[in-house]
Image (tube, rainbow, N blue to C red; front, side):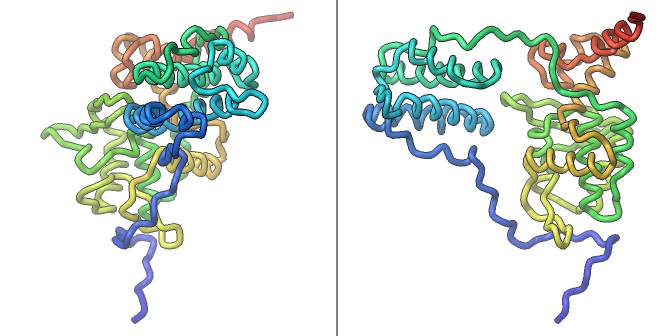
Length: 334
């Protein structure tokens, strides 16, 4: 019996078993390196405790594991062969100086080493933390580097999406949430059917941000039709709100999208819309904060929308200074 083809206006939720989840580096910390195993069971226990027990964030776990493994491999090289309990502050300093990385990345590596060796001290594997007194170089952030996406570009991006199929409705809804809520991609990927509620007068979108923080955002009237049209067409009654699709059929699976999926989605849409590919989902956060501050919204009121614990973090997203600087430079008449 032949299968009825799916037209562009017919929306079908794919109910077959979803494809196996992609295996990423964050999914598997792996066994301890030889230098840790040689230090005994306490060191191996601390390794598992640190990476599999104390770091719930997959992104942090992946970065810390890479940093610690890289340093331990450097110590275990044939020309060094420094055992775990013999690692000294000088070794950490020499290693950091030899890293051909930017200062922020060096600081991330140092933070990972400090936390890892802190646990080794607690578990009585080493006596002192060799990374505690090490320094990675001075680096001060005055203004963030994320590029601000222009408001007209954001509108063009949404208007360029073909919404005759479910995948287009999904893409427009995701980008609209980015535009109107400045929610991080990781939090958008975690949205479920229960994340959207109606209190009798207005819809409310509750997201779970990094650090275990939960925040509720009242849905802006421009966002509501985009999101509701996708919800009605998808007919999803439980589970993840935004799901992956089967490429050939463009049907939704039962598998939730992740942050990388959303980033790739945006890059594809930017290309189709003829917009610069340097923008990222984080660019919407910069645009939203700058737009609110330009409207004289107090800086103290903006961090909750952005999920920032400290207003000083919000300042990194403020691009008003860029415009002032450009206005001043354009007046130079040499």
